[in-house]
Length: 208
Image 1: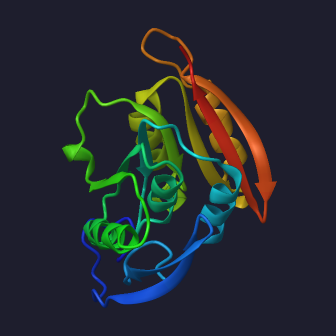
Image 2: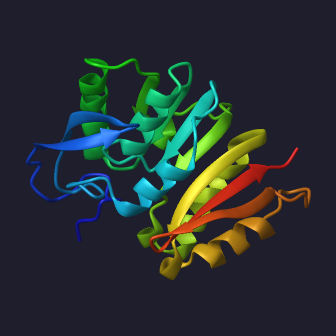
């Protein structure tokens, strides 16, 4: 079955362009079937981007980047940041590579690196994570994904996550708050900072 979280979507790779607004500016970007929310910026991502401000001028991870609205917005808001845009979907990564070039043609943009997980330096730590995480991969897979990346925040670093309320936003917040490292120390603290249009925005702050 073809999912947006497939490495190689089975649907036809039929490219098209859509008009979007990122950080108050209009762009024409490329999209295709087989990636998340291929026809528009989805509502959850819109709620997240309307809530979070500018990222730090450091290392920022977009976890589950798709065709790029979160990574591109972060890159527009802080040109001194370095944005690592992670996805398992190779079509999405190719689209984001093309969309970076489209945005750069008319706007200053931070460095954006679309990438698979295996290509990320295991010693790299992030100052911030922005994500509309792929809830539909299932609870266990989602927990494994967050367990791999949230602990890679620097002490005091923040992860901004948007989750649909009826798809387990509160239970996910509880799970994250309960996690500890091998020494029994908590990962950090979780706060629910906004509820809007059926979504919650959670902020996880790394301990240390």
